[in-house]
Image (cartoon, rainbow, N blue to C red; front, side, top):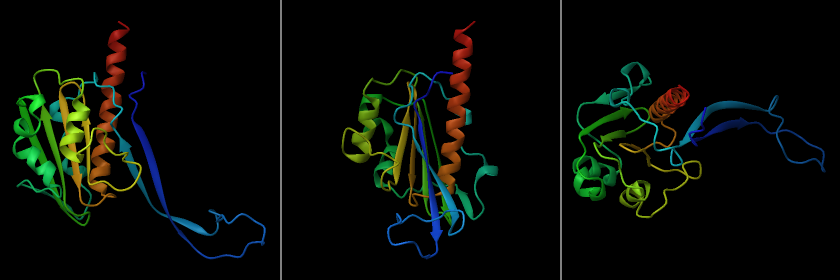
Length: 201
């Protein structure tokens, strides 16, 4: 299968206890005895995505059975990011280079993971070659988006030839966002494998 170029980094958060070591020993915990995994956070980097892999519109939203307990899906659009809210309200105005989307949707969440939103846009025509730069300027104010695996970032996006997905989550460790990005990662892998299989026929 051709690589999609998506990087996934697992951030393992540890709870450690103090222990004695010889004076000259490197100061590293014995993970088997003196630390325990509290939680694992997945960060997906979709920015290097191969743009030709299609994403079926009806499979983009997070199903209700994958929304973690303590979080709920809202009917009204709510976003912790003003810039993402502006794009959702007027995508043709905020992303002029893309034109008007033929389909537009969103999901908003609230609960124990904090406030979050996902925006979906689909275009009839192929998006410009600099689509990633256009989105990055609109959301981050600079040409290159920040590495999602370095620091904390409320916003993140994915763009291919015809589809845009934008995440805006108050909590960088939101399980809602992790679940959705994992689902999208699996969908990309599935569609990429199907493309490669069809090429071989």
